[in-house]
Length: 89
Image (cartoon, rainbow, N blue to C red; front, top):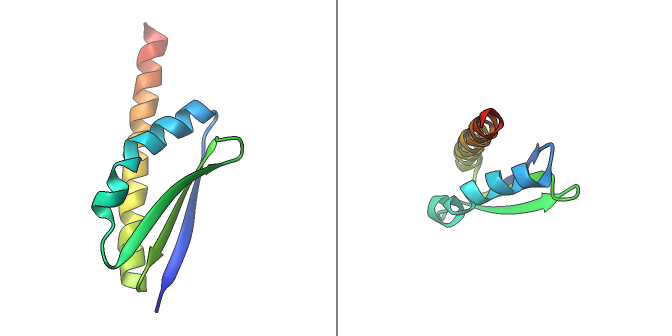
């Protein structure tokens, strides 16, 4: 049974969204397999990152969601650390 979901992440500015997107974009081809595929896009004036996942079954969908949430979280933390470091300089 095919399943899909869309994850939406909104940022204070387009720059933050772009940094996160660029950080995770290279994983799209590497993580995708015969059970799931993912696309990235922008919305809301490029401040919103949209991760669309299509999977062949719910188990694959859940695995993909967990993976993408983890990747986005790491990228967001990296953006925050970079901004704090820049602010201290």
